Length: 211
Image 1 (tube, helix red, strand yellow):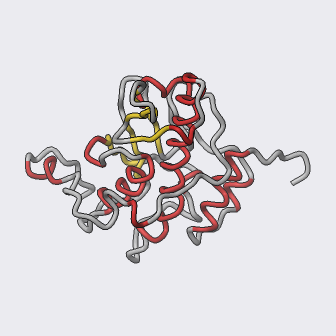
Image 2 (cartoon, helix red, strand yellow):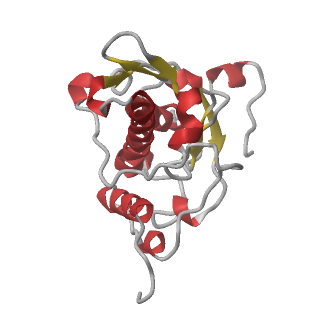
Image 3 (spheres, one colour):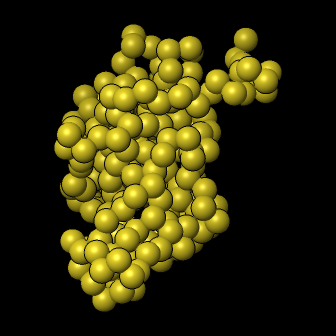
């Protein structure tokens, strides 16, 4: 691999894939694919896009076959990003190398286990970048800030900003090597009842089925 540079983003994705039990070889050999249409969209990796108009887009690389995969995997990202899963726009991911660990498939009841680390780190990396952007704007330390459902608040109680307002600035920041993850005691949605994100579309006959 002489001449191949190891970027922070590639390292983050590679280590997350290994931690999740996947084969990370393709992650090391190329820069991760991007699904953001413009540079002002925050994208720690192709799984997640946070837009300046307030959208939280999750690229679901598994198939929803009735077991709640869509809701479960979205919740992993949402928990670490500190955003209610109900606010996410879930899209079925295209076939890209970044989603192949080692192949892009759904089966054997492994979706949650396979995605546990990488999706939590995806949400945590985005939150870290948003906190860094807010701290820079306010001349503060990120330790003085907290997040709550898509907002960043300063401990002085006087300053706050939405993720949407911070997205463009945060998009230019480098994803952290090892983003801090929540402790189980701090979970708001993981392990709790989360309404099925696909229920409404199915009830209204709007869901698209494979067969």
